[in-house]
Image 1 (cartoon, rainbow over the protein chains, first blue to last red):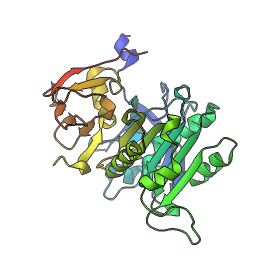
Image 2: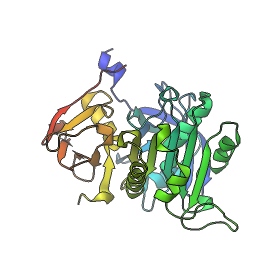
Image 3: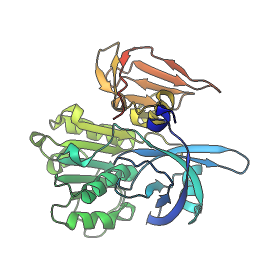
Length: 250
Length: 90
């Protein structure tokens, strides 16, 4: 086999749906058995390709939610308005169904336990997905590095992985989670209720003096405003890694 | 058409670049010929709404790399980049 084929060539593999988890009314996790999956690092993504009976193909990228330690691959998909791919994945996919994926893809927005920290993760909406892979990896690898998550959701019901985050934060040396709910808050909510801003980050983020590694993921305007705020707080720009969802074809 | 709303970053084009270079290249750096800043490809700005992909300098927005893929071939242009690094795989 050619060396290139072993190292870097992307090939499409058929994944089979092993488990479906409804995370919120609009978000679903899809756990896949993927034969010969080469393994991945937390933060990487996959391309998904759907082919209709008439041959029409649609392709999208999704962050991997599962940990490198897990032999199965999971993605978490948000149903987007007019999204042809997300509508199928969130609404129609059944256990045992198969679709094509390739990966893992990317290497810049990646965290591995040996990279250290402390970790500052800032998520907007479904931008939590690659960060969740990092938190799960931190847990699975027994890493002792400190971790904080600032997570912006529209409402309590829209918080993806809410119960799991609660479990992870309740553990000794668990991740510290700061939720902000931007559109509606449950009665008696005492947490943040606005978009992530510099004042919020100055209260929640590790001080720049502790040399944290920051990962920010979400819609483009969210990511850029958070990254700018962190730099104003003294984070070196090179310590703030960003992944923008940008416009999405759904 | 290339305002902040359509902007993503080098991560979003990692798949296309891996097809082309047969390597993961987004951790490698690219040097802007206009402002001389050097950044990992994953950190640069990317626009994918055009018929092709455009990578722009995150500092001065000049065009570093354009990838277009008409049927059967791939065209690469480096209008305003001085060099691009491709790391050996581990």
